[in-house]
Image (cartoon, one colour):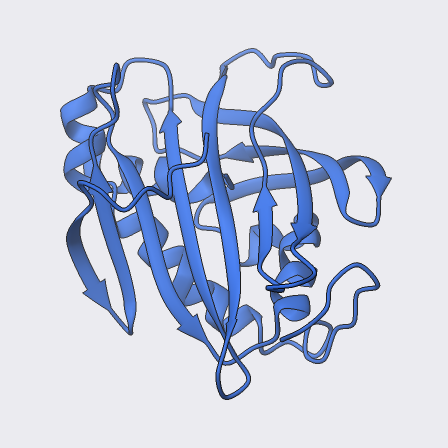
Length: 215
């Protein structure tokens, strides 16, 4: 059960830049998805980095990430995901609750999702730190107050994109850091496998977004 708990926590928090290349150590690789980890200064919880190459367009992946209410279909153990506010076509706020097995309490969070693109390199970044407020705390659910990360989408040859996802999250509550670090890699791995399948859905294939230029 402990492994399931930690898998859930690490793959459900969509998104401090963590992209510096130093000190990352590969912990697992499966289906051409690579997972790395490293220690962060001042934290007992390791940061994670996931890399893979997808046969997809940047706009297709961004369309999937912005479709936050569909997260229950592919982000592991997401109990609910609700759009709270749309600021612009490339910026929004959403609320999500993550299911954990008894006797642990579920976790929830509010995230601010922001998409930007370098128009020269066409590299897309999707940032989504957790923020305070907007949704009242729920009894019996632990609010996550520290989760930082980023999706970086880079066009490569042959109509493909390279995806690098970095994450550092403190799940809060009474889960020991050693347990989180021991089992954390499997959660993002499962979510990325689901993501590959989800991208095949017709609503994402050939998606066109006015603020994204495909490579």
